[in-house]
Length: 261
Length: 261
Image (cartoon, rainbow over all chains, first blue to last red; front, side):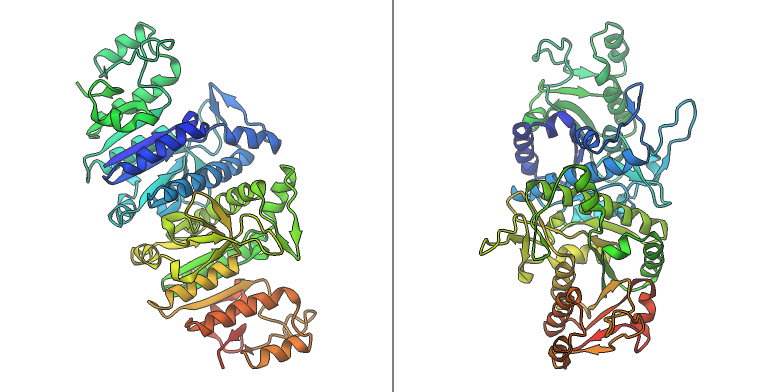
């Protein structure tokens, strides 16, 4: 089965998004789409006078920000994706981690920083059976980057983390292929050269690549997430182009392939 | 099975809502919750500078209003209900009619009035099987008042209509009890007297009640919806108090009972 994550840059560009959704719909295997937020939450937040604080690039989820991401990620972005997928014949169902209790989480403990309503996932607690009920009925889950605490609160959770966590949890029942899709062809050795895709990253060459300064800071947590997923049983992990997702999966040398050795 | 609809007045009052959700969670039979929007969409719309037009009390759903109701009804209100139900042990899943293609609809044809992105349901097209997959797995659907056109657009659809349409569609497979819950004990003969509940309304006494001016205008479409549902095979329909839902179902003379004769 495929778990495919798209980020904000794909969601924010209607052309990229349409190309991606058509290709996603064409994948015949069981599949799950995980989406990030895009710039919409920030824009609507500004209009509503919600000014979120950031610490080290991470948004602090206060009460107002939680409502904002719940409505924008869980409502507007999620349901637009569902309606668009339905229009191309993909029987999508839009969900958060609260729905059918798929991803219970805990509010991040306050240490040096209070991240507010941010959710941390324990992979053991993911309810794989609820997802299986849907997958077996031919229904395609579309997951927003939200979880819940089981006490009545939604929690804001990173979409990359949700994708990796679902991949690990489902790898006990399926051969899971996890794919992080964005607007580039893969992890680039030179950000100025869109063709400079690093074909393989594994725990041996990753420290070296980091040391050489070849990786921009934004991609490093994604690679760490991916390598962790591989080490925990996910069969294959790629980072590649949303619009060329089928090529990335099928053609060697297209996209960056993450492996364990 | 029970299909229970709650309106804005219940959603807007945390105490009413909590009392309702606890009682809803306690119903052992298969059940579906359908919710309206409450005042939140209007308030957030005002903050965003979205001024919806109304014609004869009905909101015109222009592009901005569609985004607004998709995020507020489909995201904020729906997911808060789901998280709250999960907290009281009810395995809720929040959905719109687009999800799993449960309620395909058509954009309302423009006649004298252009209602914009308003969706009309053809009950024959409701995908009962998707709901059955969830119900059989012990999952409780929580439906937002939204449908879709199958062409990539969400549509705004009245929650009473969604509840009645689901009730009729599911009555072919289940003995369906449909219940419209609000903040009053039932349909009142005298709005000033909260105890003046009309115990039974049927097609024979309904015209008379209307003629006597006993029914306030807001309740008339609800009664029409309810009587239509009864005539189309729904086993029992009530209008009653959200906080006393179990009493309404179990005690004679509590709430208004709609029947065919």
